[in-house]
Image (cartoon, rainbow, N blue to C red):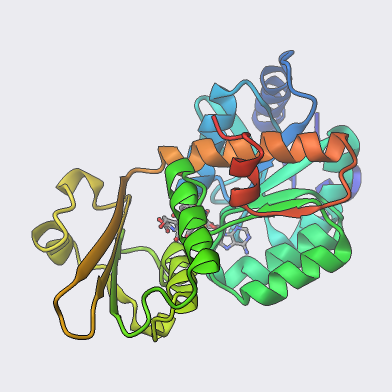
Length: 314
Ligand SMILES: NC(=O)C1=CN([C@@H]2O[C@H](COP(=O)(O)OP(=O)(O)OC[C@H]3O[C@@H](n4cnc5c(N)ncnc54)[C@H](OP(=O)(O)O)[C@@H]3O)[C@@H](O)[C@H]2O)C=CC1
Ligand SMILES: O=C(O)C1=N[C@H](C(=O)O)C[C@H](O)C1
């Protein structure tokens, strides 16, 4: 099956017979019967998280839509990305507004997953809102307040969170509860936050920024610009003790609080190697969102603490 003639004439699918055959077989493979009532389109599958989430979706026997929104690219160079043997056709920004119409017609219970980049986040949110397409967004960065208010105002179903790992979400919830129950508990304490990620990560950890917000509510004076970023492989191995095998995929966070007189110290740490925990959490979020849509829930915008509280994380 091909996208519409309109897309083909735009140059999107100036396809060879070989590509047509490949795509037909993808549709058959991806649409094998399963117990879920929605279809998942994982965007940016050329990226690390996109790829990991698509793999997790296949493990969960979710229908994976054989398309993936991607960054601009040269049509001659690459047209597909493969996930566990399943070929997904790349849909660049130039034709995605047209492509989405046909994709939605073919996959009526569509949910999208977004793990693009901080630079693209507002553009992606605008896209999902414009097409009223439910989405799970793990992408960090951007103006978070603006994103939440736009998605809320549009009533587009979404789960948006800077961290999808079950136990890290629980840790965030715990910090949030502590801040609400004991505001000012750490007043006068000095906070140091150090985070290490693969050197390709462009922005400051979105998780660290969210956790810092709870410490600020507990009375700590701290600005997110004070978060220390470690991106150099040598420092990651020698100082942070990141295994060499995890240099291209890890997320180490340490939050240290020291009392004004230096006699009391607290340290919280979450260190993750690889991306499985985030990918599995993203699948949980998509299953949860599908349930909310099916139930026509009044509430449309969720974060991962909502998903955890609903008992929807495996
Ligand atoms: N919430 C969570 O639990 C987690 C969040 N993250 C966040 O997810 C994001 C992505 O991380 P990661 O996968 O490691 O990054 P990568 O750099 O590996 O992937 C980014 C992807 O975004 C694509 N992209 C860039 N611009 C666009 C665009 N305009 N439209 C569509 N796709 C685009 C890139 O395409 P191309 O390759 O062609 O440039 C690439 O496929 C980051 O913000 C990161 O912090 C990461 C892990 C967990
Ligand atoms: O880019 C990453 O890798 C990660 N990004 C998220 C963040 O910025 O908090 C979550 C996790 O730290 C991994």
